[in-house]
Length: 422
Ligand SMILES: Cc1ncc(COP(=O)(O)O)c(C=O)c1O
Image 1 (cartoon, rainbow, N blue to C red):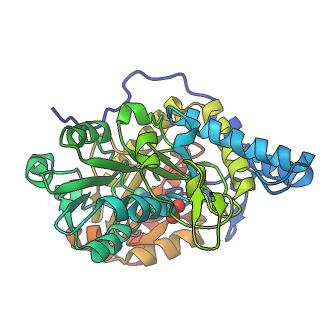
Image 2: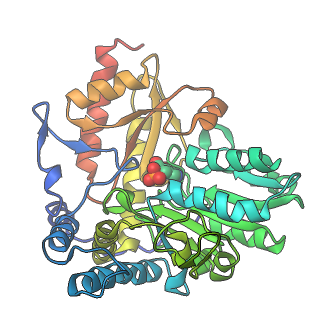
């Protein structure tokens, strides 16, 4: 039976959050004369000193191109780059480092699968099953593939504002012509945590290939690709304390070996002739050109940092902040419309204040030092389904506090007064 995502029940001993917060110098500043409250973590997270320091150290001591040189610095850069791959494999419990492809982020990871795997395995009449809560990054690459091949996209519906997947519709959606199921682990607009392991197991029974978009989950909870049982999983370093421009695509080794390259160029070849080339094994055949070496070094430091804080603890704190924010917002006297599940939600809240545009909420909140996001959050089809153009969103990370949420809720009350909302 498919159940809702498990909420951690046993409470872990919580670390000293104020000491952890001190690792993020950027948080200690005023914006428009007010203490910064950074609630835009679903867009990108802040970076701890350990990550900034790893980047500085790399550029001051080890910088060179990888895999090509025989000199000391190139060897060091190569060792650092490959150590990051080993760390990423361990971070998500991949069976082998060969299953870790470095990408620019989640978006590139999904595009890589759509192009390299999709061009070989998808043909006219096949179906690709997505869900109505997908980010554009997990829709548009499949639309491009469908246009090229004549395949069809189908969507597992959600249950309205509560924003759970409507699992009663799974059987009718996951049928024989479906060749791929691609879905998000955590919704960036709703805060829904999807039961990805159960859904991947169902897909696997039917021989359907699976991809999990872990952009919003990789930095927020323990990810175990063997437990999830997916064929692909993509995430972005910058949403988990790492630098921008680096991400990971996990692919099951047999699936990767069976795929043609994604891009051609240096680094991915075995030999090149004027007419033909041969390429390396995975993951290198998918990494054409000079990779983001410093990004991988920074991501390595980020993964170490997250594990030092403790990912089980982070998940617990996240859910506590999400639940606290949801409860506090529900108490706002004048109208508020809240999106996403009541319980078991991730650390983010999406909402609309009655008669006030989300952009106005975000603009006035910014004047009070609170960084929110307003808009469609790259979820236009989901917004249409909900019958709205946009929402305002507050998204948390482990360095945020309930005191910040209290201040944020006060600010929303002030905004309602300011706009004279009835
Ligand atoms: C659920 C989800 N998927 C994919 C992405 C795309 O991530 P990136 O822009 O880092 O490639 C995001 C970014 O917000 C996201 O929230």
